[in-house]
Length: 91
Image 1 (cartoon, rainbow, N blue to C red):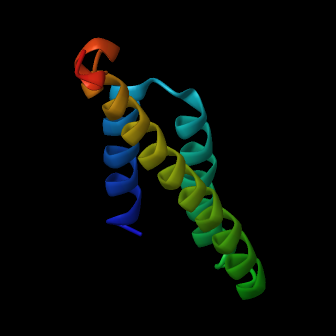
Image 2 (tube, helix red, strand yellow):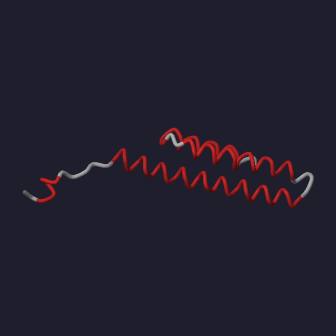
Image 3 (cartoon, rainbow, N blue to C red):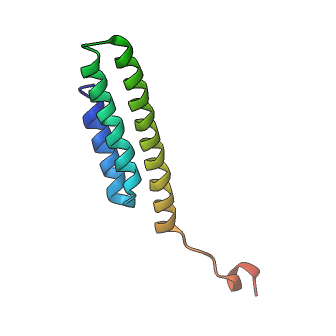
């Protein structure tokens, strides 16, 4: 967990700066808070630690998946150079 939280924050923020999709930050924040809450809950009941960690982890997966998708889409938009119809037909 010592590595999960800072790495997740770094990766999600790095992508957000590129694509500016707030959904990534919302999903990531919920996931990170879930991981932290799971660790606290684990001191009281193991089952709650497992359940909350699984839910927090699912939110982190969704955040990272969205981040990758938005980064790829943003990259394609930045580097897309359509071929004009006159050069593609050979006319």
